[in-house]
Length: 426
Ligand code: CAA
Image (cartoon, rainbow, N blue to C red; front, side, top):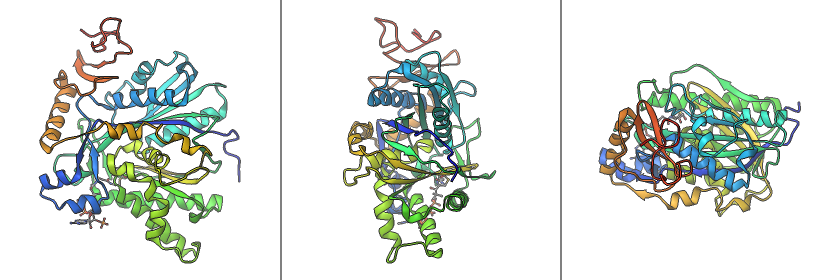
């Protein structure tokens, strides 16, 4: 097999930041006049993260970036590349990476940009970072990859119970203690399809639901077929399979697709049964997705954090297969291996703390948050702050997005939002 990446590269640390509120899917179902079992069992979710008006993708990304540097014990000056994968851009020109660069106090000799391809953007960003590290463009420097998104559909639409949001920051380098990516020819699939998209004039996505499932599974077939053909590897070789999870049941459908293909090819060990196989290899990666809902680019890496934070699983040294899908569409299958000290990451990814700090919303509060968030993005001022520490979105001022951030504010004005010069707005 060709040696695509000669250097040992992968994830050295990861960190999750989540909205500090959630709505139980049962509450949503009752408000929508739907049987709660449809959301709990039909879609496989339990709760969905609901961002407060001051929690936009910039805020989530900035917190995750700071968290990953602290968790990895890496000084900001060692970062030479920041790539944000997102499909919830807050500006048509300025990348989220620019705000993250300031919030994480990164050096000026740093490449900083966003990439977009629906939910695939995080994996596209990771690919750029892995190749940048392997190329030794800046020996000794690390790359920071952040997948950050807020998933919003129309109130009352079929997509509504699959909303969510969050950010996962990955520190990428040549000491891949968390996950090392294996050398193999790229297993990608692309085709132009109208399955899910968000016109620039809308804050909510438009989706052709059943067609989007079809496109996802077709892209999975394409990626898996190429991976299988070019590497000779088998479905049963992976200890865990992580699938992009717009809702957990989608991962169930994806696993079933690969299981059945492997069965047809006579590649399964005798006695293999799809339900038990799913429960052993996929379910342990999905519990956080069931709590958070869809976090678009971040969903696959939320599954990774969930696996590392799963007390019932010893993931040390486990071979992973990861499937990323972005509507529109582009998809990729990646093979990786978990580091030997995986257990050391339990309690250190930020995931459990972020879940513990969440507050349950009533359906009325959820609707209020949505309305206030829309108003704030148009040209408003924050009325109800929810985040007491770290960055928070405060509204727009002369067409600029204003963020409060005590680490950046001038001394003595720690509660003031950032403004024109990025230091104080009022
Ligand atoms: N009890 C238990 N189960 C029930 C039930 C009940 N009372 N009522 C329905 N169900 C089951 C159905 O049988 C179905 O299960 P199966 O898929 O296993 O058959 C499941 O609940 C969903 O029911 P429907 O298909 O009728 O649901 P729906 O039409 O309301 O929409 C959806 C489902 C299309 C996924 C919708 O939520 C949606 O549009 N979501 C957003 C799009 C999406 O996530 N697409 C995924 C692929 S694209 C992608 O991955 C990119 C991305 O992140 C968006």
